[in-house]
Image 1 (cartoon, rainbow, N blue to C red):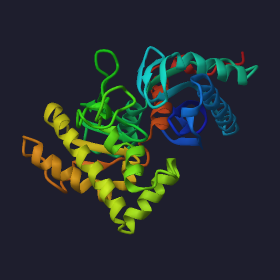
Image 2 (cartoon, rainbow, N blue to C red):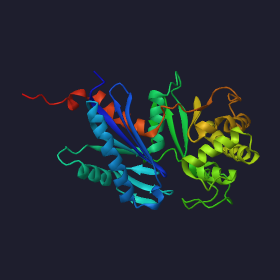
Image 3 (spheres, rainbow, N blue to C red):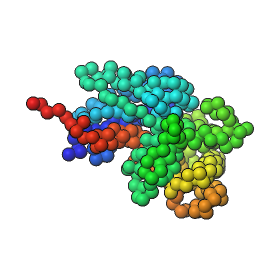
Image 4 (tube, one colour):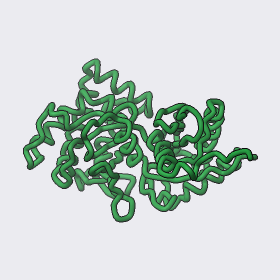
Length: 329
């Protein structure tokens, strides 16, 4: 039954890639298209139009499998509320009506098709929901999720529910200040965590900033695996800074686990030990210990595009009658 019929479309727009997927009613990812591109050099309208073009192609692939996506959800970096990106420092977006711009662009690309309803959410929140729903966390229902990309995003799940905060902006852990005299951050502050543990900072510290993006991350992993001292030191310092900031969050909210996603997943062998050491020394409960399994890598299923698509599917499952295909009578 779930192999055909209603489905969800998820669209993640990040700094250096766009990823689009379709998820069926069983939660299975059926179609995936990802393009690596630099959205920092584009206007918000251009970046959202690019994403709409990729989404339109993905929809065609879904129709070929007899799937009928009934809605789309955008996974967006930065502060997202009311369909708009209030601020996304690494993209240079401020007060961008992303939901409306994307919906208009997608509708224009699909003449003769009804307009898809579009929702939007912070990308770290949706990655955390994907981890909750598909990541095999077993009995873990409260966890802090961090995603490492150009910036550092965070989300908090408590007792199986996403904590959004009073205005929808909870989880901006990448802009917790590590050192007030540290490097200037795009958010306007100084010494934010992402200036030490974000992708750009890691690649720069490891000496592979010329590659950038996915290629740079793969090269960083390769060098760390080979024991390159500069690469190992760069990842270890990032892990130490992550551990310091995470210890404050763990002391404040007492989660069952901390889950690291994005680029951190592949760097865990070198990132986790210094982070675990900081957490062990700073978490006051005494419940944290190296190797306890409370600091863990995200699963391959825990990505924002899949979480976005699953958000649409959840709406269908909550009210299946509203999404039933009209009869031909």
